[in-house]
Image 1 (cartoon, rainbow, N blue to C red):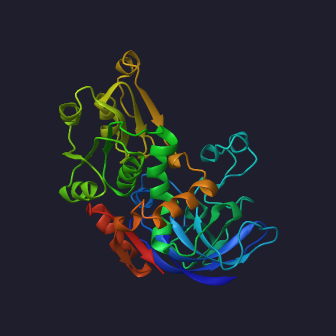
Image 2 (cartoon, one colour):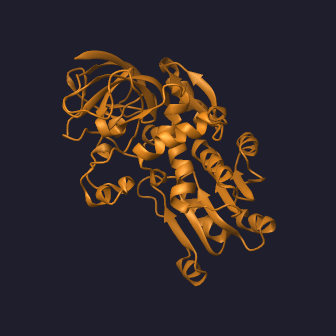
Image 3 (cartoon, helix red, strand yellow):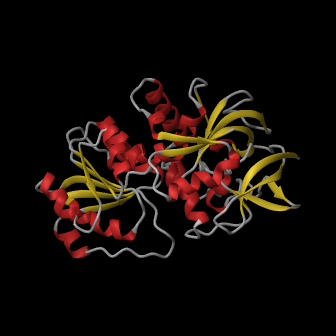
Length: 363
């Protein structure tokens, strides 16, 4: 066992910085020294009580770092490799994985915060502690499944790499993998947080036009314009009418990137006939969303659930890294706040206050 400092969730909104015992990597496992961890809305859902997880939980699921050791049988990475962690490692054997649809894998233990063998590599005060989504990247070191550690170029900065592991893959993937947006298509993005701006980046990359972004803060809308939004709107109940003032028939595709039932239910009315609404933001558990199904059917509209941007990490993480390194995906401009682990609660405070951009914990 080694000791690592980590941000621990014990059931309250405030994380505790504690020393956690971390075992050595077993067969098919990888020990990673974390370089950076993103502060993501999915972590906040846990802290705010929206989603239930086993406790105590080592928070963080959006991380990147350097491989320090590997267990028996590991072949895809070696000590010294730089890797991005995926928060939904595929089992590799279920029907979805065999079909190449790893984002809907049915054999992963990630959401149970466990490694493939059903164990947790962490202990707190002599009892099991659970890395969030089997990553726990708000820790100096982690042990993850081999399939959760994806090798990327060493010249990729850790803070940029961390965001690729969740928000960038989720947002850009929703555009290029899920909705498969073509050049010239009109689009709406509801919510200009980390994932929403990632969607805007993906739409700009795909050549969509116009790109309309709706949010409740001027700061976020200003950031959206910097990343390629052609029109920005304050989000409220009149959003569908104001979208139709810009695109008379409605947009070809709309993305909801917040996870609020109220905005999800507004989305179909912003679409043209035959348009597609993409649900990217994840709402709290047990919160139904009212949808006018008759209007949806009569107008030939569709709703698409987008889990992790339909990402295949082994394929998509290196591709997104290369797009950044080639200057085509300005991920670094999304990072507006870099903090040490000790200031993790400050970073969540900024998120709750609606601060623009993303916070990243630097190790």
